[in-house]
Image (cartoon, rainbow, N blue to C red; front, top):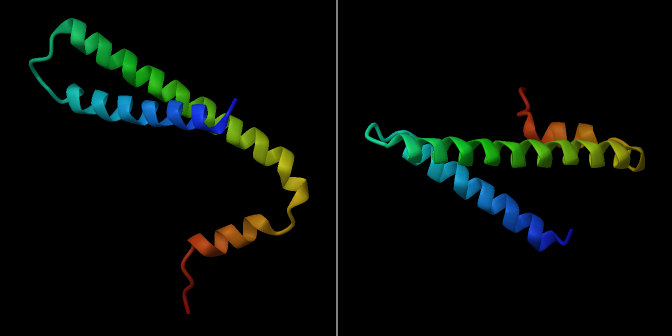
Length: 82
C-alpha cells in the first residue's frame, strides 16, 4: 500500500478518535449519536492496534540487520543521572 494512503488512514483515525472523544463529553448526546461516537472510537482503536502490530512485525524482521540500535534509542529517551 502506498505510504500516502497509510498516512491518510492514520490521520483519519486520529481525527475520528479526537472528534469522538469531544462528542463523548456531551451529556445531552442522543442515543444514535452516542452509538456513532462509540463506533468511531472502536474503529479508530482497531486501526491503531493493527498499525502497532504491523510495526512490531516489521521491526522484528529488521532487527537482525541492526546491531545496538535499541540501546542507542534507549539512551536517547532515558535521561542521564550524574
